[in-house]
Amino acid sequence: MFDKFKNRLELTGILTTVTALRISAGRSSEPIGSDLPVVKDALNQPLIPGASFKGAMRSRLESFLRGINQNWAEDPAEFTSKARNETIKGLKEKYKEDDKALTNAILNQTDLVSRLFGSPWIASKFQVRDLTVVKDTWFNQYQERDGVAIERDTETAGSGKLYDFQVVPAGTEFDFKAVVENSESWERGLLMIGLHQFESEQITLGGGSSRGLGVVSLELNKMQWFDSEGDAKKLLEYMENQVNQTMGDYQYSTQEDIDILKREWSEHLINHLYTELDKAVVKQPSN
Image (tube, rainbow, N blue to C red):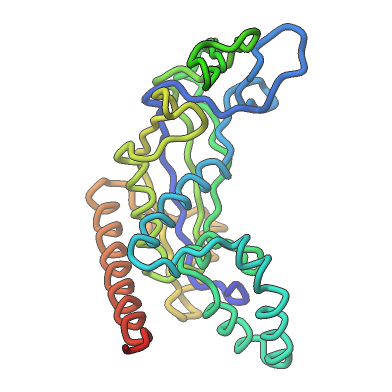
């Protein structure tokens, strides 16, 4: 999958907190301060871990695909515990002298989501950097909110169970940067569907979503896309342009151009899923 460079998609944008955001760093051990502080960087500024963004998107895409076919989004942990010691080991033994055949055999055992997001046996094609705060949108302050544990039997506040937690205020902006390498067109379509969930405020981040926390809005403002299409000269030219920092030919920065790529890749995804669905129907045993 990664032995040869084929293509690279870079995504940049702004993620804005529509409501207050709480991504907890765990219970604080400090004698003074919030019981549950938010994740911060080395400068004590709010931070959204890339893993939090990626995990929320993966979960949503898995739910979509499971709604079509349960096998398209399996639990990697379950597969690992039940079958990796047998299936993966058996494949390695069978194709120990043919790396390409081994890769293809493992891919056939891998669900659609894991091909893009990775699994214990396949590296992820999709990388999300930690989202750092846009300084002009954050004024060095966190909001403190109170919480209380409710006794389920009495439906009243539990004695001595009051706590407080930090949140990042609504309207705070974070820089979003992500990279996808050696992806198939349908995988980029899957990514576009996932990003659209953030663009349309349908995915929340962090804790407290039932209280209205964690609503965010993503706005992509630039895509940098290169596909070698197996052409060595195109790849050499791309490498030269990187060194010379002349990447204008690969930039898509207007909303119209970005939307064209989104539609193209999304169509490839839908066509791919229809094909996979037809294959699944054919494989079903007849009564």
